[in-house]
Image (cartoon, rainbow, N blue to C red; front, side):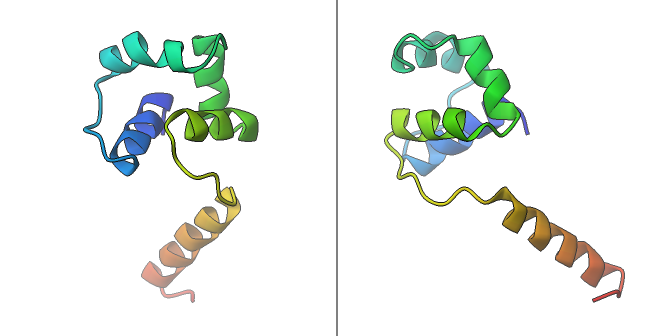
Amino acid sequence: MNAYDIMQEWDLESGREARSAQELDAQVPAILAGEDYEQWKARLEAGDVKAIIHGLKSWGLPVGPLKPFEVDAAIETAERAQHGTV
C-alpha cells in the first residue's frame, strides 16, 4: 500500500470522493502545516505512527489504536484457513 492508497482511503472514510494522486499532490501539502510532503509520504508508507496520526488529524478522522499487527495476524489466520492449517 503506498501513500496515495492510504490518503485515498482516508478520503473515503471522511466522506469525500477519493482524489487522484495529482489532486492529492496539489492539495495535501497545504494541510500538513509546513511538514515536508515527500518525507511525510515516505514515513506514511513506512507505517510511522506520528505521520499516520498527523494525517488522520489533517483529514479530520478520529485517532484510534494503531495496531497493524492485528491486521497482519488476521491475514495470516485467513491464509492458514485457506490452506487447512487452522
